[in-house]
Amino acid sequence: MKAPLLSIIIPAFNTASSIKHIVAAILAEEFTDFELIIVDDGSKDATLNVIRGIAAKDKRVVVRSQRNGGPSSARNTGLKKARGTYVQFFDADDTIVTGALQKIIHAAERSSSADIIISGHRVCLQVNKNSKKYCFAEISPEATTIGGANLIPYVVESIGNDGQLYNLWNKLFRADIIRKHSLTFREDIRFGEDVIFGLQYLRHAKKMTLIPDVTYEYLSSSVTSVFGASSLVPEYREINDQELASFAGEDRSQELDDLFHWVRWRWLLSYWSAIAGSSLPRKEKLRLVAAIPSAKYIAAKSSRHIGTKKLGIERVLKTLLASPHAALAFATMFSRTKRSVVKARLLKRRLR
Image (cartoon, rainbow, N blue to C red; front, side, top):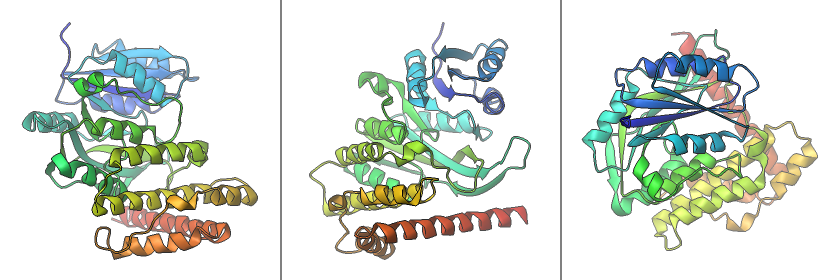
């Protein structure tokens, strides 16, 4: 049986009511040279029956079932079965934009020397499957190709500035690089494993191509990110930090060093926000905030490489590190402000 050009891998856990939407969108694409590998990760609902029913009608759909091991385990199972030249990871709760696969593959064929293709995406709110969808954020990277000595600084800067390198679903990976370096998703952590996989892959990439086409829609049921319990585990955060440090390297230029430390500050604020938005007792929140090892957080000496605004944020956060109470209050205010901005964007969309 001829191997397809593209392998699409979707982990599925209790998504019986949603997975059929993204699967329908994929199967309706004009581009057809793909296999769709759906890995049921021990679902307790009718997910397995739903995807088996779809597979019975379309031979491009491959179903695998396993005991619950988490999304990383499910993606690893999918990688073992993948036969394509390229690999792409989607999530069961989201959807793709019409023509997405053709645009992505066309970009890969046009930039045949690129090791990864990165496309745009948008963030949409859909409270439930019957509600109207409102898209309030869109990231559309400028068309460019990055390689050589510019690749690592670009990746670190992007991680600190936008979301185009955080997630899996807007990236097309080369299967030969994954196989050659035995790349897999870490199954021992439940936070940031997608970022870690991306960083480990990019260590072996020589060139990446970005296209402005929006190909994916991330669907959220809340106006702000819902932080799970895994986001509060400091050990997971530390592993993410170690992977970023390893990727950036020890012999960093001043520019790369400033960009690297800005990511640390941004991740620190994200962690504080997760703590502030959790349902934990205040005493426990303060304990988690106080547990942050402040020594590794270094503010830039000038705004040359990160800009005045980021430098100001770094200095404010540096001051807050000395006071868990002040840090928690700031994170709570920051989260509320962010939520208000998103609500304003949604209201504007609804009034159009």
